[in-house]
Length: 371
Image (cartoon, rainbow, N blue to C red; front, side):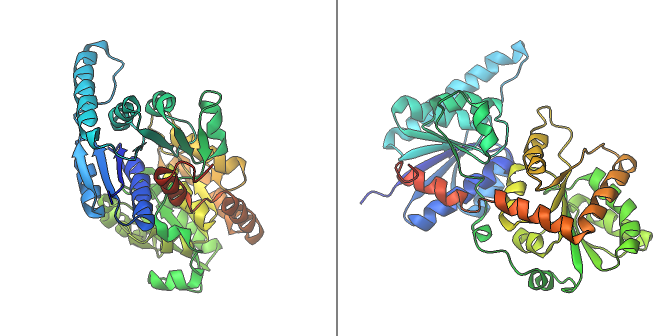
């Protein structure tokens, strides 16, 4: 029997690769003999993440599209080379090709569509990026995280709202809060504020928390803080809290985000698509400060979905601790109220779709699985 083979196209950021890895893991759960190949960018991040996950990787020479005309010849040369390479690779006929978003998804999806191979794309952000808007016209399925995304594709597009694929650990029930705190070395009896600026940290959020945490802790002494700073900021942030006189647990990062989120009563976070999928899968109240530097402001659109559902408090990251401090402290005070926090938690849980990776995997294995 021939093993089923799947190609995933995309990379360059964790936001593209992590959902793809979650789907790949789900395929392996359903079909252990499956072969999965990632066609990625040439960035070191792609190699690092896929080596850790144990998946085959083929780097592409494709580069992002530029609006500057003098860059177009080089873009077209790289594009054609990548499409041709993907076409040659697919002579063995994979069962399906999944685009993960971004420019590196383009050549594999286009090549597969030309060869009559089933294609699909992941679109976990509320508003599709340029690549997914183009690839949606060549895809047999579009997997979206939220209902609002349908409106951004052409009428009749094969859009299925399944959620954002996340790690299998999030598919189970949330850990009991006190047990999760104990597992992280925290006081199981005290309420927990979790702060995370994603894998690299967020300097403006870090600085604002150092400013307001002593005041919040003085008003609410039954709380404790776990601050995931980003590795580059860990030492400086730990020293800053020590100077403030307010105790805080600072970690550069944790591999156990399920325990960290499960342990929390309130969370301050960026608004990446995977992060929001994890927050809603567990059902936790959050204050979201979307990444402010991206041209398309896609994190703001993501956060707005939760805020409009009553599932989060949305704040603007004003890029300075002084300007962020007052609104952030006011939002924390709101979530310190048990009734308010419970209502936000319940709204977040209603948005959660922890089985998205399995749903996408089932479609890739059998297109009729979700019909």
